[in-house]
Length: 302
Ligand code: CP
Ligand code: NVA
Picture 1 (cartoon, rainbow, N blue to C red):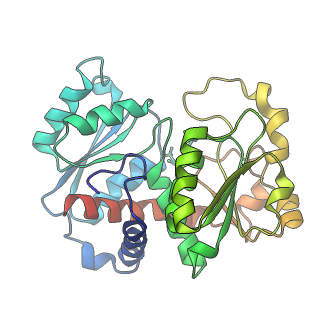
Picture 2 (picture 1 turned 45 degrees about the horizontal axis):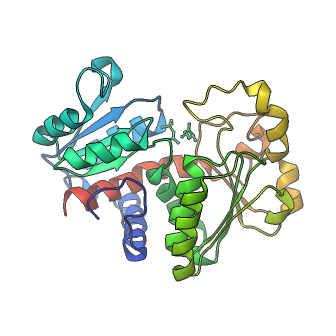
Picture 3 (picture 1 turned 90 degrees about the vertical axis):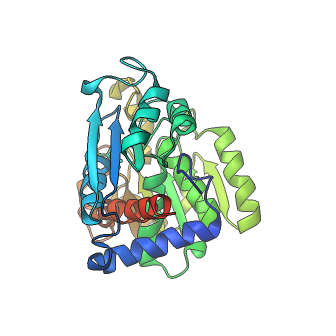
């Protein structure tokens, strides 16, 4: 594994190793205080961010390295200069590129012209750092991740795809419950199911909330992803039955709740659940930093 663009790059052993290293980084930060000493990471953002920006910046710092934040005010990629020139230049100075982009193709081009590892920190199709942080969070609460049944509920999107991919590699059950017309990408679903056939995972899609009765974890995301200009009022009625609320927990028996955030309280999740005892949401946000540090250490110090 040289880069992390989709998650499909990982073998099961590599995914398990990243989770183990993420746990170790969290438990023994002092041991890794100089692990990236003298190394620099450029974090590029075409879209907004709270968690990703802060966790990469502070995360690199905690490993003794240096992070440089670049937003589009310094020249939009592909506009002031070509994506390939961004990649070629940054590769001469930095040891890793982390990029949040609109179009997955930008990352593919960046990887082609970069001589240092490229990490996808969200694109239209994938959010692999999120998916791995989510399974680190699951692994901290369940001894055997392969026995866990996780239900993603809401819009079939980049986060759904990354949960499918990480879940398939790790042998877990991941079901996406999405309103009709908002299903995940069929090709990515098929690719994840092909991996699942080998690992014993179960990866499925439904539009029926009753199909997740008896699941362990329910997972939410925004109903409208960044770059989607659909007015909320146009989709709200369709999505309200897919809200994460106490009634959903009561009727399904689900014990734990995840949400990648940003959350929209009163829409995709209620405050009662987000702030309640079932919520692992802020552990999950913290875990972004630990798993990303594990990913950077693995790719940079290869
Ligand atoms: N979950 C996540 O990626 O959050 P940000 O968009 O704030 O980085
Ligand atoms: N699906 C969301 C995730 C945000 C972290 C988006 O792409 O906006």
